[in-house]
Image (cartoon, rainbow, N blue to C red; front, top):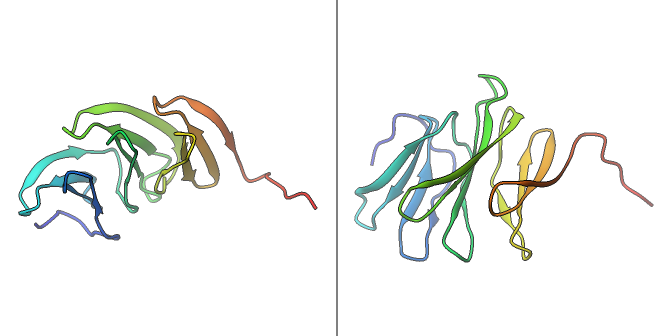
Length: 134
């Protein structure tokens, strides 16, 4: 498959064998095991990091283009490609959401860390003033 932009990470494979890949063309692709497109979604910014999949099969993706301004979003999809929700971090780039044992999403969005619930609500966020304790 050819995308309209660069691909900067390896694919993520879903439990049903679907191959998930994003590109700098702003599209997020779901491919069948034979390489044909199952579905695609046009995001608001370049995708530079791989998605994560939770135990219920939901796919979580971060995207954004540091050169275009603060357009970094977190997206949640079901396996059929339906957008469940989108959260605007108001940051320039969003990394791979990590799914915690508690079911929450831990999302790096420079310069902050966001913790979101499975339905896209913010539990908490921390910015650059985070300090360590000794």
